[in-house]
Length: 126
Image (cartoon, rainbow, N blue to C red):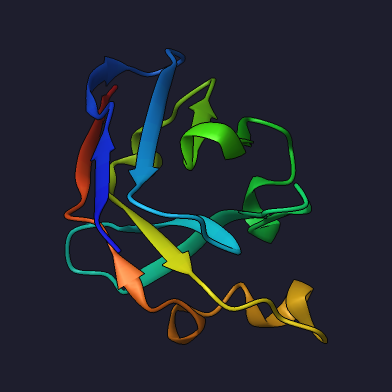
């Protein structure tokens, strides 16, 4: 599976960005992880083919919204009210096979994803 992510850039605090990730074929789950300088890669959000969505607990305030266009095998991450702490490289990740159980928990783990995009840098200035 080939992944093409785009949409990163430099934005001022309080601003918005929209990330996109297109896959070369149909997938079960597509998600976003991010890695800030000197930190581990963290789960951001994921969406299944059926459009079940899961977000990191720290993002449940509604600043980020993940969506999916199945016809285009593409996901989007709308990021609003961006904060300097959101500065990171954002990685798109894909899981091909459906999870029958524990999807809500398992899809938060990077180990559940088989394919990764090249990353797109988001920089939020204060």
